[in-house]
Image 1 (tube, rainbow, N blue to C red):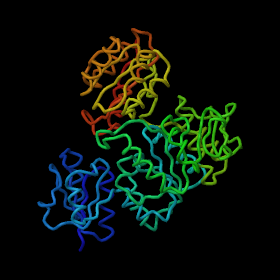
Image 2: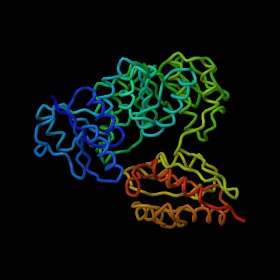
Image 3: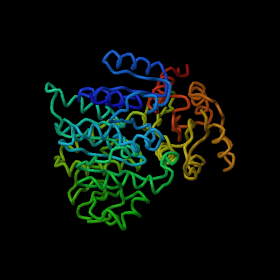
Image 4: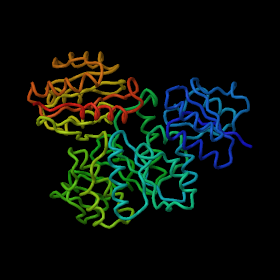
Length: 459
């Protein structure tokens, strides 16, 4: 029996291991971490006949019989030595999304990528498709692992999929060399993940490869970098713009844009832009891209309008948790880089108390710092980035910050400062990854929500 090994045991790794086993492979799995949840997953998989090794990096020399196939989870860098060695030895190495694609490529996919805006756009697209009575779950970096959909698709008792609506990161594209969506969407492009991808050009080319393999392409024409690239590339794509038809690239008659408060697609009014309850100009752009996808898929404008009007928003992205003593507590934990955090801060009413910090990323913090100076009455700093952020704030002349270490300290202090400064809200928008104190941004946002709900109103 052929042997396959899965590296990384998040939800995507679990799905990949089970999918390979169902295919008839002899499967093993490993993860360098040893957390309690991983130990539970280890026990579960081992009860299913899949040995799991925790606490060390996978090593080909120590693995006994060489695997014929290695499947990597998104968090595993594509160029780590063991994967380079495996490819040199002729071992097939692929990502979990590529594995799922091989099972689901007979179904049309929407593949949504970009530095920021992916999750909201993916959720909007899925909501529209589902309102149109299509079985089109959101998956990938949002919702279910794509491998879970592939597993479910082998169950004849389940309703067949109509579409796969997948949020796909650069990490997943890098390890999915044949993935070819029916519709590819590129939401934004700014420097991110450069500690992994090294150069902006490499990061761009990875994302561009997904769009090049897509039958149809949808681009955000308001993004400066994508717009610049669009002057010489992507002439056949469908472009969107919040600045009207005259701002479109490519064939303007095929584009999607705002005009007098309406979303116009291919010259036809589809839905009023203010039907979407989410704040911020960036969400208007996300709306345009979602409408462009829906019209490419042939969805009726009445279903689009209904879905947009009923859309509740996205957890961890400018998510209002509660209003206490007239102060709005907002969870923007998904803002894991400077650009996303700047957009989130710009979208809320000022003045606001900002909670920021975590595991810092490379990037340009200039616009973020300027927005802090304009909108934040005070900043509370948490996590590993606290020292770095304190230094940067001081350098730009902003002194109303405190280093409070944890969310447990930041949330009650944020409420107290909001009352002191008569601020309109307390915003968690970290501008950082979460891995210094949490497993992921969802866990960070969930903890923020818990702490907000524990707060008591003034008597």
